[in-house]
Image 1 (tube, rainbow, N blue to C red):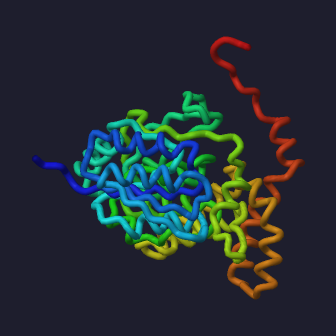
Image 2: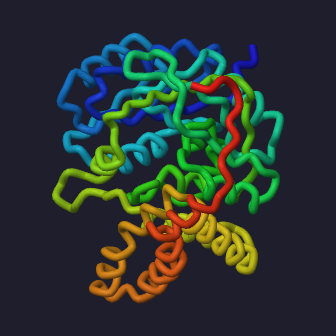
Image 3: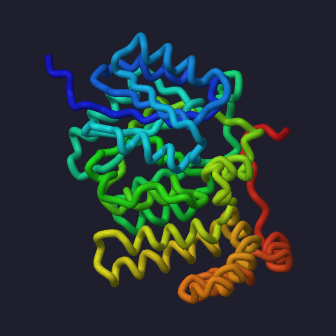
Length: 335
């Protein structure tokens, strides 16, 4: 029987007792059986260890690894990939679930399209009690045929879940490992987009858990280690520069890379309200830190961001725009 290529699933966990069993059950219920599930525990202090060890004891496809010191979420995401042996790889969050056909559908799509590097699916959203909810945001997956279109999709998005698709392992090994920076998952997605096409299965096979208590500050605080080297903060300016660095490190020619960087920065700073307002808040402290550290190249890059953002994302300009823009047309039944 042809069991298909080996798939590696990496699940970084930390104090995940609330939902990890549900996430593991959904992965073990996949109708594609030729996979390994790598769990890396970042020194959990709750019952995560006992739950995961029990699962590993009863299914030989699961391997459980634990570090005795919390080294941060970014380190943990890197750790599970470094242990992977499959032709395909995907990260699995400890609180999300997958429909049984997720892996098989994505493997079939990637096997049929050798030029593609990642396969996504439609996404459903669940709350803390695993009940379906309607999101307050729109996903903009990078499905364009050209590099320019895919970069534009990432720059225009306000929420990014492309990181949780099934990825061709060889392509993932060619890009930079996740960096300890806010938005590291967006950087990985963008660098993959510059390696090949992105596919999407038109079915809801990933169910992303929305937890309103998981604020941006809370997420950022978990990214770095707890050894005193300092947390990774919410820093949209740093994310923008890291995205630009990701484009520059791609295999494209210098002229093409330069054009894509200009496009990215303009779309993020001027037209993406979430990122633009974030840059407006943090570009000042970043400028002072770059100058104090004599990082003059970074200082010049941040000046460019400030020149683009500050004239646009301020109260006067936003107020004028709201005053002159045409009213939205409403459809359906008025509330």
